[in-house]
Length: 382
Image (cartoon, rainbow, N blue to C red; front, side, top):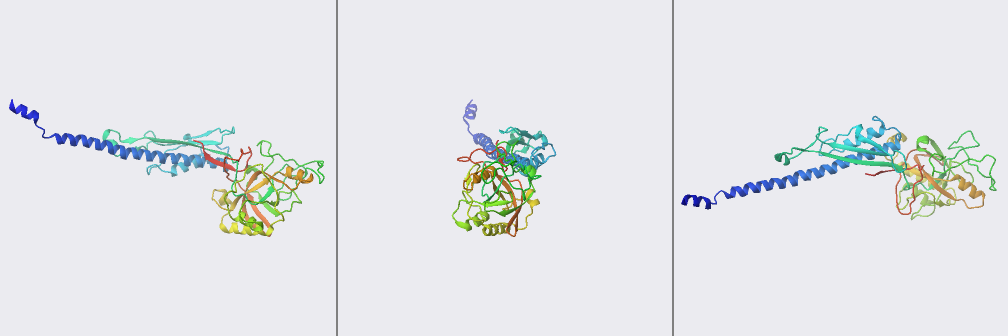
């Protein structure tokens, strides 16, 4: 009996119990710290992969082929390549053409692309756990989804300090030529000519007569300085850009450098700078080309960034023509922005090619983008 009582009161071996419970608690804490932390990191990496794929797909929609939604089209293939280039825990995500969706945006067109990426058991590439496997959970599944949109931009940054008229429907010459046509709507007294040229702004994409990245990309344009006497697409007029410099040096500096506070929207009016500013324009263009002297138009069109791609403000030719003829000072209303790859100077002429260009989506005093805005803004929507 005494031996039974002594055995019941004996505490030897209790430390083993505490050690066992402590080990269980340690393993649970380790699983929480290691495996859950790994899963959180993996989730962020998977989201980065989906974001990259969606953005690449939206860029391809904007600048390669807006209407090709096929499994082998540029939007799908670029989305998959970009997503797979962003690994999750040193492993490649699974994403197939079936995981790419094209969605309708707020403007009523399929300008959105959604990408879903996987590291799951069903796809044969789950994540391996470290501690949780001792509790019967050897793998974990991760997936992420993102959507991006290619939409008209409501602003551009650092536009060139000279502007040209937007494209119009030529009624007097055989066809519109960016280097030889002349806009005629009214005569010098403001009286409509017999067959006026027609300009319709970018508010309605179906009726817009202006420049289009789809139709005009690659077109060579040779720009000549103008003092306001001729309304031709090849004649540029210089306008004042905000900045700390004054006079002609301001023109050169605005071409060479991208200064803060130079974001521009649509519908604002400007007066042209006195004189034709041929010297400062030539100096600025030459300095800008020297920043990236060897890049080609084909390389930039394929996606290589270059400072030689800039936005040229496009002004309303009808507003200007009728205003000047009606006795108003030359007034330049910016209605769109042309993407322009600067090839260089030929004497006093600026030579370049039309190219797609990205833009901004800004709030504050910037209004909505017109439906046919030439610049495109790429942004995530999911």
